[in-house]
Length: 347
Image 1 (cartoon, rainbow, N blue to C red):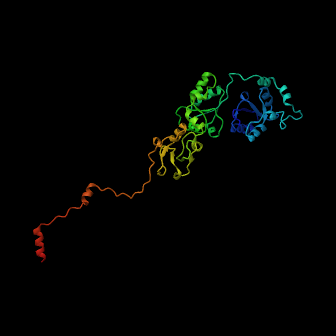
Image 2: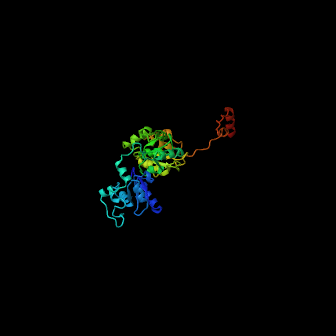
Image 3: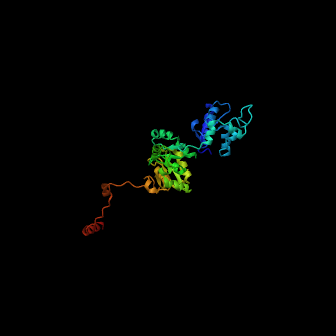
């Protein structure tokens, strides 16, 4: 609801952190006074005069709380410090809107009357993947007027201009960004923007353009697919991010192996029970998400996927010597003469 708003929080440290968290949790960006669209403060704060001189609205904390409860940004007018009922200065009469505008500071008037400069920097909120070169990219982003959030915002539905990721990244953030509907751009976008002195169009640097288009069309990637997770995740997005990737893609995180259509092994080796369903590597999940198309299991199969078979215990193999010893010899026939002599003796 605060998407695109840059807010300066001018409060005592004891309450500043809680208000700043409310701003960021609801899509806003906390910035310095010089970069702000609006400031939040309380009556009697010495910074209110500086804010007024900067030519931006200074509102009470009531504006933020009511904006959150209403679900959309409210007009600043009734919350301007010194004018609203709750924050008016004791003993000073309320001014009409027209009267307030007449008495506004020259800086504030100039800001209203002067159109925005053509070369004004856009304040973009971005995220960096775990394997992106943060030491190089972060100073450039700040120089261009951008801010960088932790990749945990990918699951919080926070408005982001894009995720900056290295090409071929397998840390999980790019896959999660695609599933959650965020644009993923290469590091080249940042360098090209630096060279141009302003932000270039993200659409010219998309790394998963086709996947982004499929998501925009409302396609459900893992629709009806029950996926069982085996082992501990080593990906940057963690097990929580993987589960969100599956569920937001339309899939089901299976609670047991018996309920699964496929097993995703998060470790190098599958140590689970034998199963008749495919057992695949975590790359199957990431590649499917980044392509926004379920990939064939065969390419990602682990050798441990076997159908359980009932069989009787096998007898130990006999050695060739033993075989010869136990082999039955054919009975020898006695000559006719010997047989006749034996019969006469018996008589």
